[in-house]
Image (cartoon, rainbow, N blue to C red; front, side):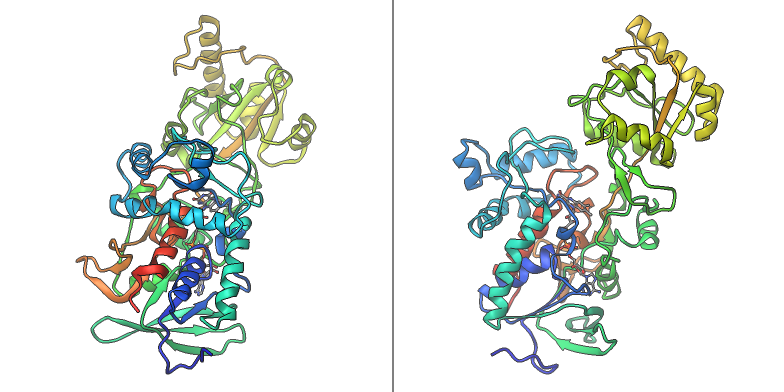
Length: 476
Ligand SMILES: Cc1cc2nc3c(=O)[nH]c(=O)nc-3n(C[C@H](O)[C@H](O)[C@H](O)COP(=O)(O)OP(=O)(O)OC[C@H]3O[C@@H](n4cnc5c(N)ncnc54)[C@H](O)[C@@H]3O)c2cc1C
């Protein structure tokens, strides 16, 4: 039976029983390792408890069963294409070329993949081959599989799990090598644990508005990250001699409708700004009351990058009564009655009899909005839109008029700890800090997605790197 004393070094101490940490613990235990898995939260699963858990993987058995021809090389080439070459090529290669093994294992364990998967992509710039998967209960479907495998490791006494316990410090020798951690449990008691290896798998900092702003230079607008992910692992890695990278890759999505202006604000809904799915009748205006993009721009990535250039990453979806009457509601899964109610009650939904009144209510320059709409209407009349918009169904002229405020945001961490190809935390001179490893969102989305949202390239690398670390990378 495994004994947990402060004197016996664990083969690996894992900070975080989430996406990465669970996989690392399960596979290290399968390999015969003694694992101490510590999480600040009362339950295991981390971000998967709140996230979609969509993963991408090429060359899977499921693809083969469905007659889809795909290879990791094609996946890798597409990740390079979508990110315009800005991903970390070594890390992306490691993740992508091991993704099918991870996904096939999930399936063997009973992962309840959605029957229509794999698909090309949903919210992000699409892949050219269907290689995108998720479970019926989104991220929780992955947690179910991992929790079962974790329990097997616990039952064999190969894994000791400590929840409600926060790692606060790394123990380092004078040469910088890491030999353990210090932690505080739910009762406030302090503990010290020795480990031959320490894996930082504590997720990102996307639930910490101060740190988020400090690292990205952009406020944390939306509240959706796992609340325990405060950036503690990243801070420990940096204080041990590592460094953070990837700030230049911050990207916002094309917007959510937030509850209010108290940032980070919960997300009320998502507008269907996908022209292939719903051709737009509306125009989008920025804080200068100016249009900034053809609203039927087909590329998700172009839409996101264009919004990134707008003041406060914000725009208003403006439309008239004709558009309201003739189209489906622009908010996903909302009825017209839901929309009407929101225009009476919701801070981000504004209705007025005239454009001037609308501009005044939403705080935009009325003359500028009048001019923007007049220009747009002229483009509709001549079928020559100045942004090249093709879908020009009607002039915007019938009151009442409406505006919905949309906020570009990211709910994941772009900046992350620098590691080498063996996932060892490295110093600025690229030398590894002995015994210290990191994987998952702590590496920052900017490394595995570059300056784009590449489908499934956060959850998948977390799961894959956890598996590889446990299976073969961690030395014990
Ligand atoms: C709403 C949302 C939707 C998403 N959807 C997708 C998607 O569809 N596809 C995709 O690829 N990515 C998606 N992501 C991102 C992806 O899910 C995450 O990047 C990934 O799950 C993070 O895994 P992780 O192991 O790094 O962190 P986590 O799974 O969050 O695990 C970190 C763990 O560390 C623990 N911890 C934190 N601090 C401490 C401490 N001091 N001591 C001990 N434990 C600590 C936490 O409690 C947590 O359990 C989404 C993210 C969000 C927020």
